[in-house]
Image 1 (tube, rainbow, N blue to C red):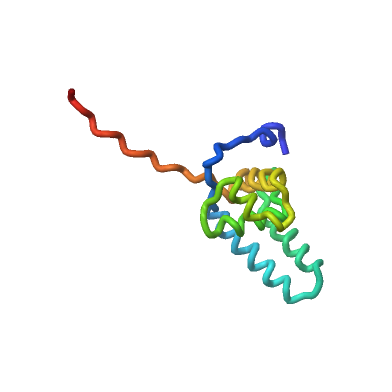
Image 2: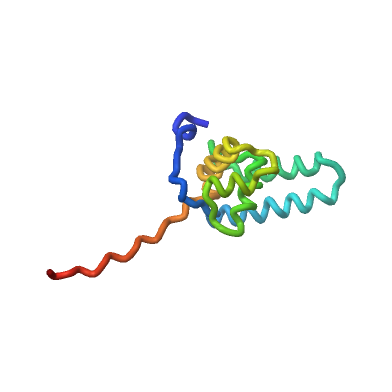
Amino acid sequence: MNESNKTRRWQRSEKFQLSELGETAAKAYLDGIVASRSEEGRQSFDEARARWAAEHSVAEHNVAAEDGLSLRELVNAPLTLAELTQALDGYGPDAKAVKAGLIRLLDAGLVAPVVAATPPEPPSRAW
């Protein structure tokens, strides 16, 4: 992770959603995990996650196996970083790991910030 990624900050209210590429990647993650259940043991699960990460890493933007969890949480609705961290509580990654994963997913083009709609301009008043 380069120095600019370590200091990347967002507003608390900024939400993130899957990009079109991210939707495909989230489905591939789930399909890989479900397929790994046909074999016994944790090794098939870990191999499926590693295979998914390798397939969805783009150029110098490497996606980690644990980033699939974040994608799966973003399938239902856009989330803020705090909401994503809370959703993943109990699955292993701490707040720093969730932020690092979000940065990897953003850099790989799998996740995008939600673009807030601009409010309409108020009507001009001729006073």
